Length: 149
Image (cartoon, rainbow, N blue to C red; front, top):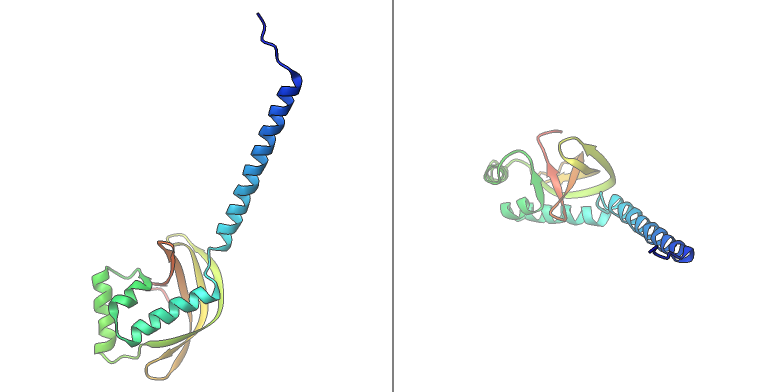
């Protein structure tokens, strides 16, 4: 006995499949575009990170300084020693940041980063133009500190 197949049913199922597939591809493309656009922080997000880091530095709160950055120069304990030495040695330390521009770069080892041109004011009142790096860590933007200039 042959199974009866109606051509209209087959056409309707094909159309439904095409619509579902098209919708899925559209949603996936929009999602990819959204995640691509969030690969660098907004000016406000970057300024908040810098403000938090600067406030922690002014308070000489090493634990908070570490909270707002990813430092690739060593372990957390090494970072604490390094940051504490900034205050003991009376070296100038950053107290404020002014952002100019933010751009996206891709590094082999670190993935996608954001680099901001900024002016840093130090505790001894001198200023310096620098490139600051930002990286997303556990869903939050942080300063990315390396031994690279």
